[in-house]
Amino acid sequence: MASTVTSSKDSAAPSRPGYGQLLRTRGAWTFLLPGFAARQPFAMLTLSIVLLVQHTTGSYGAAGAAAAATGVSMALFAPYSGRLADRYGQRAVLVPGVLLHALSALALTALALAHAPLWALFAAAVPTGASVPQIGPMVRARWGVKLKDSPLMTTAAAFESVTDELTFVVGPLLATALCTAVHPAGGLVAEASLTLLGGLLFAAQKGTQPPVSAAGHARGERVSALRVPGVRVLIVAFLGIGSVFGGMQVSLAAFTESIGEPGLNGVLYGVFAAGNMLSGIVCGAVAWKAAPQRRLVVAYAALALAACGLWAAHSVPVLAGLGLLVGMCIAPALITGYTLVEGLVPAGARTEAFTWLTGAVALGQAAAVTVAGRLEDVQGGAGFLVPMGGTLLALVTLLALRSRLVTPPGGRAVARGVGHRAPVAVD
Image (cartoon, rainbow, N blue to C red):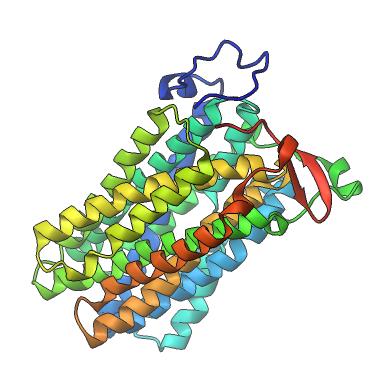
């Protein structure tokens, strides 16, 4: 992907920025390695709750509801966490956050094993979700500081999507193995432990965190990313993507149990995530000429079409193939959405913007887990209707409002009536 304007910093960069060049960025590994460790548990949380609560209650509806409470609270609190990180620094938010998350997740584990009522599980699930560390958005914000005005930003967006999906390959496999082969609470205990350790290591990397500008607050330049119309459109699109993740998690768990092979759940979900990861690698290596708005619409249409076939799958090979296809369609939509943020949102609000999108995925996942759980309790296989419905509704919205994703002339992102210079648009 070539930049329309070059600067002295990137004038020597090749026309096709690659992963090798990206990973040679000075200081990148100091936050990438602890960041990977800290975000790994994110892929384990929902599935670990579903498997634990379903084991203790015997109901996918109850399991989905408990997991949904976690997802909803994360979606509601994540943008606030991002705003605080923009204002006070990532370390100031991360340290107390990971401590609270570990304690809340362990409390949820103890309550579930004690067969506590559902309202008690909700009471523990809310702080568990609200305190989930927003490592992915924080890493993306650090890339934004390192690669300001560089054509490598699109490669960085693809790399982060690939990293996210690698966690969704490893995470579900690890959670399933721990919950089915070790102990039903093994997944959630491991999630809490990894979050605490990885989060503290990431927070210790103070040298690469985005700078905090107190002067910006005094001038009133800190604005909410939600005020940018394009961000609201992206939120709807990411809600639909979340419906795929949530619907797949519950429906695959129910399907593999119905055929007497619960251990296949992690494998099938891993195939789905592997498709996402592989297509993300390809997306980051391609020098795109089409406008990102057009790429997002095309990718989303393909995702909705692929999701429509899930409900008709009744065998492991067919479901694995469709899951792989659905996964391959998700990465281009995610990568393009995150790339659009760079041109739509002022630099001082980008961590918040990224957390709105991450929170939208979590909220869509939470809603999908709840609905799919209820549907699976009524009719086996009906949970696969959730990804189809969620992506189709989001696609209609995206088509109707796609003009709001176009960066204003001059590369100026506007929120609350205040104009801000944004990085050079990349096409």
